[in-house]
Image (cartoon, rainbow, N blue to C red; front, side, top):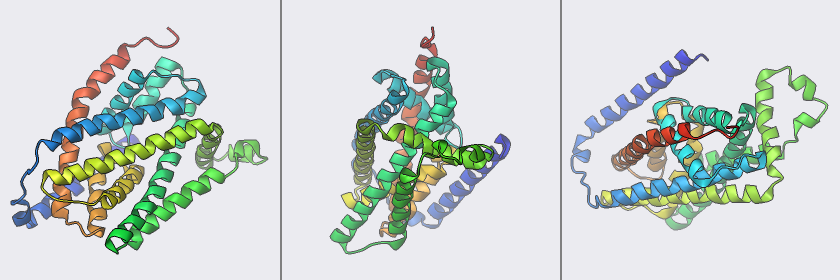
Length: 316
């Protein structure tokens, strides 16, 4: 798929989502007209949590790169994460990852194949954690509220078992099939993900640290969601918020619009609806969260990009 077609599909989907949201708001104007900011001061707390979450995104980056001989300092990793978030915001299909790959190549002589390896391993761990904690959250919802949603449980089971399946697959680069695989580009790309996992999985300490950092990110997202609802005077249980956060974390797979704009919000709305939470509540919460993250990234993203571009490369 060429770049023009990707951009066209991304923008078209974004427009459709915006139009659908606008129509829903228009059709249910009486519900939205009564919405008020009950605790606006909590917006500051969400902004702080957003910045705090990037600490663990940065630590995850540091831990993933360390086995491959790239030792990032914390401030460099933090600004790199901010830059990545900014470019994800202004480009479709998570273009921030491409910007990160270029930076690591230029400044640390980190090959694109090695970058793909770390990214693949990161996704495997992220989805594994999302699937595992999502199942735990589903149980908590059932234990507290006596309700469950088979679709959500099925999604978490598929994600969880799917990641376990990828983890236990052998390293095909060391098998007799390696030469035949290399002649099939699509199969080779998939198997590179498996081989990337094998490159990192042997370092148990690194895997444990990444697992902890990913889990903390989910907890921060959960707390932020609870606070977001309370800003409008609504209450949501920790179990419900945790389940929504887990689905949102897994939703990066389909972030085909800039920063997953519209996609992430749709996932949040439909997941909340499955839990019995009205779209008239989740739409304002989703919009508020998006506005806060956008403002922060548009302020800090260019500054971090400027800082990183001015840094001397490792070779220099």
